[in-house]
Length: 79
Image (cartoon, rainbow, N blue to C red):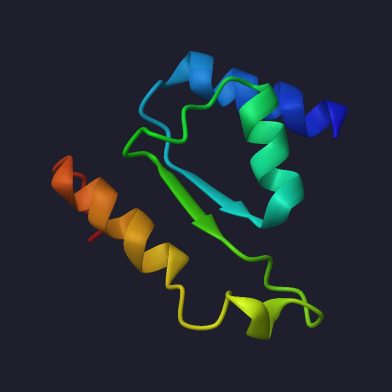
């Protein structure tokens, strides 16, 4: 968790518009500790895709599609 916390803080400092895809409670906790605002338009929340929790909210949540929508709204094109 310590290295994850440092990574999130570094990403936020390097680029405040970084889009975070937070899978599960642990990721959301680390992001919160790092000061990521969940009210911002750069956070996508989803259940973790592990076999134990995937059917509890990950399937159909489309986290990559949501992140892509955020990036496209900022005029960032992948292709």
